[in-house]
Length: 467
Image (tube, one colour):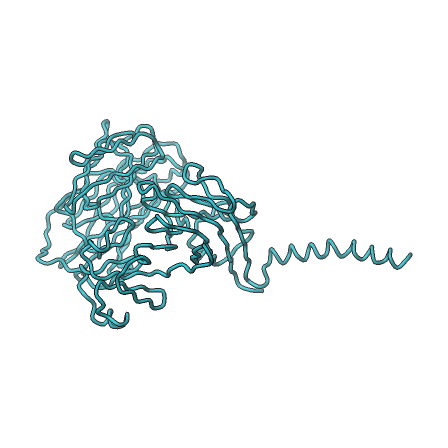
């Protein structure tokens, strides 16, 4: 056997060993860090292209335009990781606020959103102070540091917030408790959050609900009360009705009582966590102030009322986004002389309103999801606004009446012609299905403004404990 033959044999043996070693390293990630680079338009086994085709344009020369809200992409980790850090390379000259969100729950879908670019902050002419990822904008410079700001804070009505809290307690002047019971006679589907006000009284809610059994799986109902420090102070729980199938056989009316005694005066958040199979048909309470935040899902009345009753709601918001998921939910929503036709399932429609006053909105037949940055009440007398002004994509900062903006935000860095923003997610909070994570680009107002977001690259660093 010649020397050359021996060398060839060694190479033949070494190649699969090296390949196996490389594959083992990729799987085990002994360093604890796995990186993925992805330029749009180029194939990647780990990061998919942006979707759907109705909200993004085809990639061209390493750039893809987002033209609708939201656009999404999927990440396929090949094993478990504890944290993911994403670098997004983009250009944005027209969308007021761009955020990246990770899917955190389904039925209904909810996302953990983190800021990529806030042009309202970055392009403001107000005095700007940055400390440890927190931004303070001042119409007229009053504070020299965040320590000074928090030591002697201004009134809560003069501060707008973005992705942070302003911990000056809200107190409702002239409030007195009552023993009278009121009811919210609206079918609300699935998970909801609302805030209420307590002073010298027992917090009490009775949730009357039906399990419609339209989806597979158990339908547990859990109501949790959080104080102003976001600490849980009370909870009530109801188990499934023992029908975990999707046979669409509804149970009779059930009820869940939520009570909390001896609470100090203040604002309390109630989170009613459940699946889309649960329809709350009536909520009874002695609390006078109740406002829903983020979204409400006005459910259909199939199996409850012979005729749909819909809902009448009240909001100061000038922009509501609405969607139905069924042909039976096609309808016209009205507010005064303004009408919005919801014509197709799974299409988001925008109801644009004007004025600072509380506006009445009529949803005639329900089966509609409503999303807003403001608050929603089901009676004018129940409305109150316990939160500071929130900086949104539609805020006129100079005309807002506030003098300060407090934000958890770091401006993107510049790399040549691109802006680069970095966000990090704990993977325990990301919903995983078949080893896949879903992320969205949230770009509110992009359609109304005829704007676009240009995405060039999405790079990822995945972290786990090193070996």
